[in-house]
Image: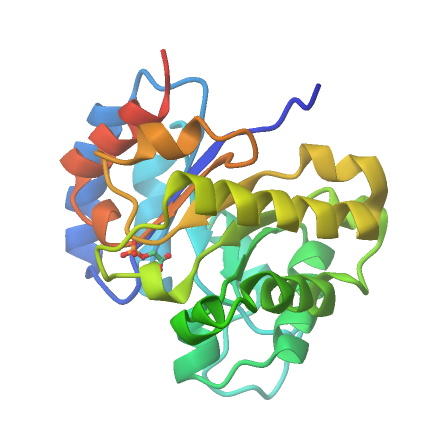
Amino acid sequence: MANRRRVIAGNWKMFKTVSEAEDYAIKFLEEVKDVTDLDVVLCAPFTALHALKNELEESIVHLGAQNMAWGEEGAYTGEISGRMLLDVACTYVILGHSERREMFGETDQDIAKKVQQALAVGLTPIFCCGENLKLREEGKAAEWVKNQVDSALSGISKDDLKRIIVAYEPIWAIGTGKTASSNDAQEMCANIRGTLTELMGPASENVPILYGGSVKAENIGELMQEPDVDGALVGGASLDPLSFGKLIKNASPM
Ligand code: PGA
């Protein structure tokens, strides 16, 4: 039987200044101090990471970024490298989020290079994939997501692949209040595991696959009961420390 880590990651997107992040961290730590059976990650804006490193040190909460450069270092104005993220105690990085693909023109090739670079420096990528409404309505969602997974991950060694997390985030469910049904989430997460099995063999059983898209304290329990849903990537509902704390407690059966 698979013995997968379960992960709840918050994606703050472009919200919170340094002082807002510090204030959040103090309240949030109080909420999650007794959580032991889940990995909790906060993916914050770059500017808040250093302050959060100080607040979250020695706590159960891990730190993540929301993007990084595919280059190691060099003349890349405005970019942030993986090594810079490690320096502020990040251990995770979201890559290939649909907002970066759609609004900032990131291609499958860019994302593949970023995943490779994150793994090379020792970060855990939270690789995002997911279809839009049109593709879902046309019955092309599974094929689309398979292609996204293949193109980002097929160049990576089997050993490195064991260190990734995949987040299935249907675009039509992000920020819309419309969650995928737990059956739909399960079906696609199982498909993704099938694709990972083709790439890396039975080790795919150990890769955490998260669902993302309008996850809230009220629906996390049902989603977590699905056998291939190992956690969630949470946007809007991670912005308030008390309600995100409640969501985490609802995700954990203890
Ligand atoms: P949402 O965002 O929870 O606000 O739908 C999820 C995400 O974009 O990761």
